[in-house]
Image (cartoon, rainbow, N blue to C red; front, side, top):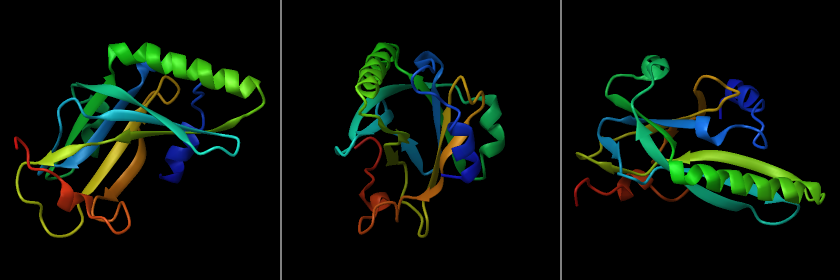
Amino acid sequence: MPVTSMIRLARVDFETTDPAQLRAAVRLPQVLQPLPHSMVLRVAVAVGRNAPESRDFVLREIPQPVELAGEVRAEERIFAYRLDDADVPRVSAFRSELIARKRDGRGGAIAISVVPRACKVAELPDGPILFTTYLRTAETVDYVAVARDVDLRTLLHGRDIAADTPRCGV
């Protein structure tokens, strides 16, 4: 995560932010497109010494935000999302659960990420296959890069995710 993003995202208070205003976006090479109804917002929480617990929330596509137009480079597209209406109360319930744990003195750390799932419309070129994810909250006002120019070929050590990407429509 870029340092400037860390500073901006540190202002986000998961206990009070409005889930209905949460937006996410992903920048992908044109050879990739998001799989329909498969983008999720993952909220992972580590409480005390326990292993992190994560929950996925469904994201629904919205028109590309004007403020991200400057982020698009040649041969790329940006796809933007909001929480599905049905998942807004789920996020609120999860938040209430976390607040209760915090009151019990079990504190913890939270990580929010956008999990892009895509298919390829053509064969992937050699070299890096880069993607960037963004998050916008009521506190950040604008979209903030969460993961910038991450290579699908090296994201997971020992596994080339780009090579495992399915062909669209198959």
